[in-house]
Amino acid sequence: MNKIYPFSASKTDCHGGGKVRKIPNVCLPSETLKLVPIEGKAGTFLRTFSSMEIFEIFTKFSSLSLQCKLPLQISQKKLLADYYNVIKEFGGEQHSRHDHHDGGWKAIGLITSGGEVYTDKFIHHKPFLETPAMQMCPYIKEILSIIPGSKRRVRLMFLEPGSIIKWHIDRTDTIDGAISSRFHIPIITSSKIEFSICHNRCHWTPGHIYYGDFSFPHQVRNNWDQRRVHLVIDMVPNDDLRLLLPEAFRHERGKREFLRMICRNSYLLQYQIPQKLKKVLELLHLH
Ligand SMILES: O=C(O)CCC(=O)C(=O)O
Image 1 (cartoon, rainbow, N blue to C red):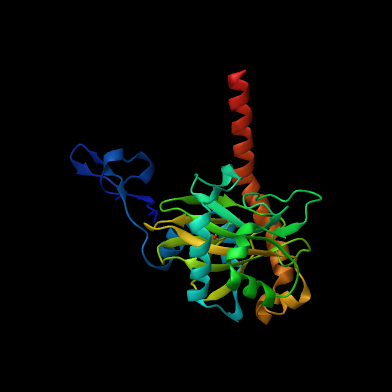
Image 2 (image 1 turned 45 degrees about the horizontal axis):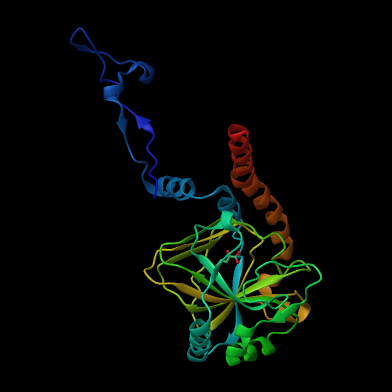
């Protein structure tokens, strides 16, 4: 964590003809400047905020919750059995948003636009269909049948050891909208994974279904020495689905809408615009 060290110095350190004189701090020679850590509550506060992104500070200040658990129990054993069936036949293919990861983010599609295992984008006029990999997942089919509403993409998603999913936003992935909402069921994971949606630290564990609002900036770091595996289910938002979320979470919709706009703009300024400018400069340099 970053340390905050304001400059401070003694007022009697500057010497003039052997006699110690009191002079203002501004003319002290640099070797007399000392770094003093700020202690107490102010120090803790500054250290915490200096290590955060601006959008994290907004959601932390307003105590905005962007994740919750659904009241449904999942059998970890049955889910693992489906996963092992699938990986006997299929490997993962890299996520097509290469700007969002370092190469270690992969997926096997169980429901995709068009029904091909390795299509991870929505293709206009191609409906969401089960892929051949879904035939190996009797338990996942059972889970999907108890979550109310239409399914969009359903994927087994991997994050390889040491890999990173960089801060990014998925604009339309929110239960507050009308297009898509994302649910995760961890299959293989560890407490060493660092997963954040703005300032919310997501310690998601197997045996549960979680909702996360991925329309806010989020990132994942796999600091573990094994592959992290999640089942990721994208659903068309609907009221039955919303009723599965805790009441307090549902009631924060207005607050989320306001902060979503602020966090998106902060993300654009901090990440997206500089990245785009860099690309333009690289192109100009090449030609
Ligand atoms: O795998 C995760 O936990 C993050 C997922 C993610 O970044 C995404 O779905 O856009």
